[in-house]
Length: 130
Image 1 (cartoon, rainbow, N blue to C red):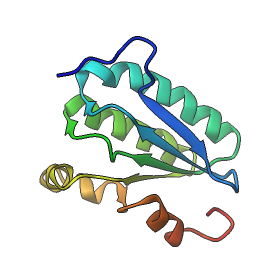
Image 2 (spheres, rainbow, N blue to C red; image 1 turned 180 degrees about the vertical axis):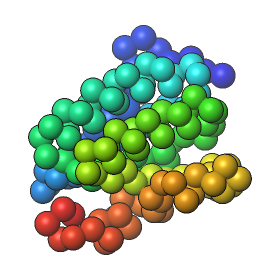
Image 3 (tube, one colour; image 1 turned 90 degrees about the vertical axis):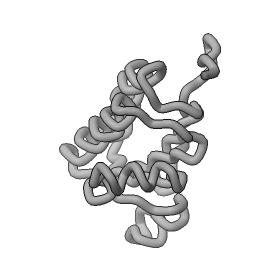
Image 4 (cartoon, rainbow, N blue to C red; image 1 turned 60 degrees about the vertical axis):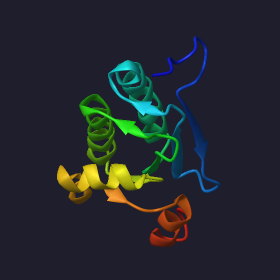
């Protein structure tokens, strides 16, 4: 398993033009115990800053992620709960076929809003958000 290099970012954040939505892309191939604790703390802060600024729609892009363990699932659930408690919605996009199977087995496909791409999320949102 490749280790994350010091100073190498685990994620990027991109605000949507309307400002009421943001996409967080996970850059690590692994969303597991090696990266989840550090990433969870960072994403909690980022999400709170965005929520405080009025953002209510978050897209978590997992296209680069191929391995997720229970720590990674915990990260996603924690982010979902934080966003939902503030009246927002977290969408997951870019989920591989393998991750889709895991989500179905764990019934997480019923817990999260899932779309194929960010554009698919935009199509489901009011025009003022997208």
